[in-house]
Length: 414
Image (tube, rainbow, N blue to C red; front, side, top):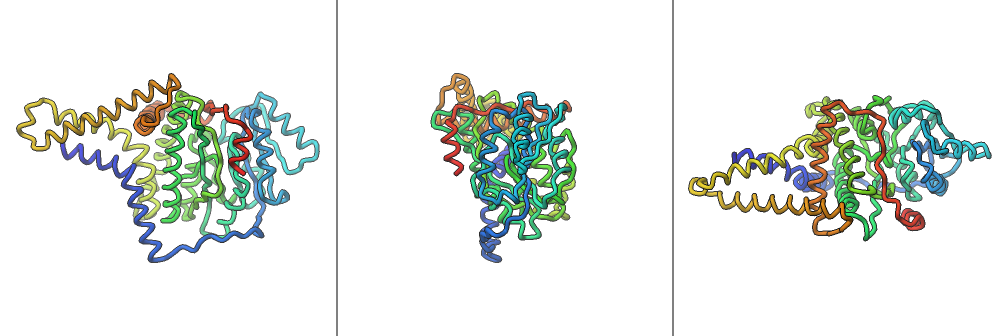
C-alpha cells in the first residue's frame, strides 16, 4: 500500500512540478550543446495571411474585434479577415455584410442559417482560404499590435508547420478566485509551452490564437472538442515543429463565474480524453521520440492519469492509518498521519474557497488549493462526459467576465 501511494504521489509530483524542472534542465543542457540563435525580426517578410474568426452570436464583441484586427501592425493588402457567422441570430452576419457592401474588400463573411459548430465552421472556412498562412483567433479576444508579424516570422524556417500564440487572462484585483486561479494556471502553462518549444515542439496550441501553413490543414472530425489541440498535434506528428510565440498573444477575460468556468473545464477535459484516443499513435516513442515524451508528460498524465491518482492517494493514505494498531508495526505511521492531515487541510481549504466563491468572497490564500482541486474534479467529470458519449461539436460557450472597461483592454494589448 505504501508503494502504491508513493507511485501515485510520484506521478502527481512529476506532472505538476517534476516535468517543469526536468524540461528546464533538458533545455539548458541542449542549449549548452547546440545554442539556438534568437529569431530576428524582419518587417519585410509579410506573406499573405488570412485571419479566421468563428463568431457565433458574437455581436457584442465584433465591433471591438474588427477594430483590433484593423489596427494590427501588418500590411492591410496582405491580411484577409474571414468571419464565419453561420447560425447566428443576433444580427452579426448582416452587420458584417453591410460593412463589406460599403467597399471593405478586406472582409469576407461566411453566413448561413444552420449552426453546425466551431469545427464545422473552421472546415468550411478552410475551403475559402487561398493564402499560404492561416491564423485562427476567437472573436472575443484582443490581439497585441505585432501579433501577426511575430507569428509569421517563424515560417521562414521550413521545418515549422504551426505557431502557437500565448493566451493571457486579464484579471482585475476585484475578480473572483476562479478568474485569478485561471490566470495563475495560464502563466505556468505559458512557461511550459516556452520550454517545450525550446526542447522540441509545443504539444498543443491555444485556440484563441494559433497559425499554420494552409497546406498542412487536415479536415477535422465535426464532433472534435479540442480542435486546436488535434490540429497542432497532427502537424507535429507529420514531423513539423509547432513553435511558441509569447510576443503574439490574445487577451481574454476570465470566466464570468465558477459555474461557467466549470462548464468550460469539463468540456476541455472531455476533449482531452477524446484527443488521447484519436492520437494513440503518438504514444509510440520509438517512432516519435521527443514528441511522445513531451505529449505524455505535459498532456496525457495531466488529463488522464493525475486526476484519478489524487483520490487514490487519499484512500491509500487512509488505509495506512486505519486501524490505529498499525502504529506499532509501521515505522512510518506518524509520517502518514501527518500527510493525511495535510491532505484533509488542503482539500478543506479548497472546499472553503469553493463556498466563498459562490458568495463572491475572494481570499488569495485559497487560490491554489481551490483551483488545483477544481481542475482535477472537472477532469474526472470530463471523463464521465466522454464515457457517456456526450462529445457534440456544438456547444454553449461559457460566459466571460464583462465588467471591464473597454479602454483598459485596448490599452493592455497596445
